[in-house]
Length: 283
Image 1 (cartoon, rainbow, N blue to C red):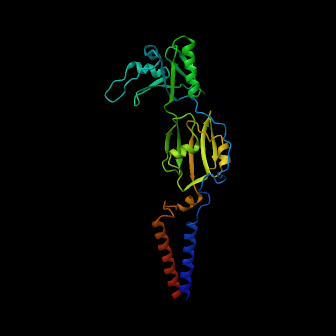
Image 2 (tube, one colour):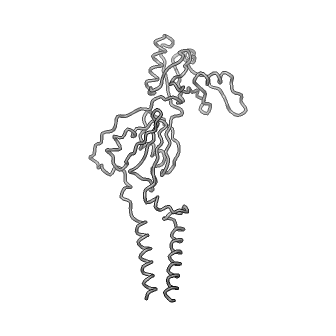
Image 3 (cartoon, rainbow, N blue to C red):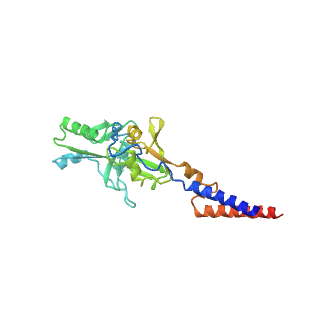
């Protein structure tokens, strides 16, 4: 009778553990405070701006290619086995370098926020958007009577964000548009894993010599839309923390409570306990 009573206790404990592990999380869905009639005001959209260390492609075009080419950097080859032109070394010293993978000459913004533009000389461009930079160079070319009808095309080449933690594809993702939201970045990373915490997504941003951490709640649309980190900036790091259930599910030796091996180990342990108790009871 005692042995049968112990078996019932052990079975009850195992059932309680299983039921706890199978509990359905109540914070999985995004935007839980909205419905089809909900309107949410967004924070002021902040476009990506030029920052020291950024690499830029700036191309000038006009009806007279011979003139516009004077304002475009030459492209140098640095493939294996091909010598790099000595002039390319001069280029990098003056604040711009070359990107050979895409055959596009690039400018590297100096720590003071400048580039050395052909003929125009040193230009201070830090803090400008792509459109502002394009308009600025166009204005300089026309204002100095250098080009009558220039078209200036500006692209960011090394601007991106890092997505870490409980997402499908963590890694670095380039920003190829003027504005990028947190939701778009998470989509690029394949969305959150089911084990990712929706209420505690962190965005770490360097502002000057300080690191600022913003916490965003994907289940609350109103607070998410008002966050200053809803629109991302280059260099932002997004971290998706594991849920509390996921943290507790991971054992000391690295096993997961949802793994078959873990439950086999638990079953084996409980069997050993029952056997030991039965021996003592018989004695």
